[in-house]
Amino acid sequence: MPKQNRDTSPPPTKRVLRARKKVDYGRIEKTYDHCSFISTKKPKARIININVANGRMRAAPPLTSWPFPGMHQAVTYYPDLNNAEGWNTRRGDEIFMPFACLNVKGEAVWQGLEQEVAGLSADPAACAHFDQIAISMRASQKSSDITECVGEAAAAIYVLEQHPGYKMTWGYYIHSGTGIDQIWEKPNNAGGTDFLIVEAKGPGASVNSSVFVPPGYSQMDEGWVANHLYSMSNNGRAAGQRIVNALGLQFVNAYPNFSGAIKSYYGLAQTSRHKQSASRVYGTVVEAQWLSDGRLGHNHSTWVRYFT
Image (tube, rainbow, N blue to C red; front, side):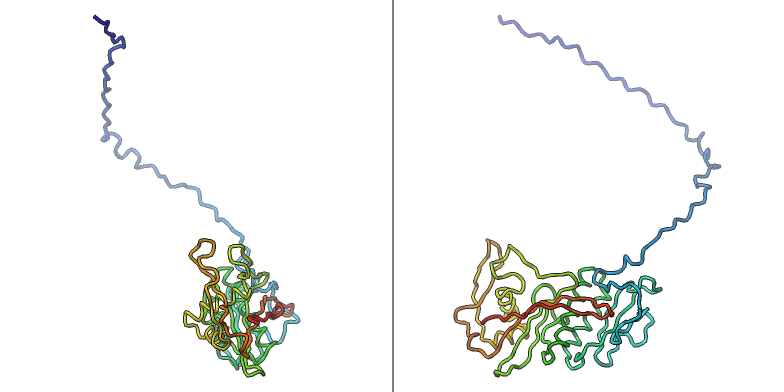
C-alpha cells in the first residue's frame, strides 16, 4: 500500500478581535468651544510688480514712448481708446490700429495709432479690409493674430501707395484661415486684367516651406497658387473665379492622395488656355516693418509672374 503524505503544517491560528474602546462623545462635547482657529496675525499685503510692457504684442511698434519728437505727420497717437474723440471715424484715407500698452507708461491699456494711407478712400474693399483688421486687433489677444493683422495692414498699404490703380477683390474682410491673403486687379494695356496675389507677413515672419507637400507647392510657388485658385473657384469665391475665367485656367488632380494622405493637390491641365490670354497673374510677399517715424511700412519681394 503506497505511503500517504502527511500534512505537517501547523494548524491555523484563530484571529481574536479586540474589543474597540467606546468613546464617550458626551464628555468631549463643547471642549473646544473656547478655542479659535483663526490666526491672530494680520496677513501682510503682498506687493507684486507687474511690467506693463508684458501686455504688448511682438508685432507692436518697437517704440514704447508715444508721442515722440519726429513722429510723422501722417500718424496720430490716441492715448486712451475708451475716451478718444475721432477714433475709428474715417474722414478720408485713415486706417486705425489698436494696441495694448503701446505707450508703456500710459495710464490706459488700450491705445491706438491712426495713419493716413494715400488712395484708401477710393477703394471700398480696402476700407473694409482695414476696418476688419481694427476689429480683430481689439478683440484678440493672441500674439499670432496681432502679427497677422499688422502684416495684412502693411501689405495693403504697399499696394495702395506703391501701385495705384490696383483695386482689392480679396482681403481680410472676407477670408479666414490659410490660403491666399490678398488679391488685387487692374486693367492692362493688352485688353486683359493684371492680377496681383499678395502674401502678407507680420514683422519678422517669412513664407512657409514644407517637405510634406509636392515639389513646387510651397507657399507662393506656382503650384500653391494654382491649387488655391482651384479651391476658391470650386467654392464659389468670386475673386478666384475672376482669375480662372480671365485666364481660361483648367485644372487637373496633379497629386491625388499625396503620400498616402487624404489631401490631393491640383495643378494646371494641358488643356488650360492661359497662354492665349491677355490677362496676367503676379505674386509678391510683403513683410511689415515699423519705421522710425512711427508709420507702418513694408518690405516686398520681387514680383513673380505665374502661368506663363
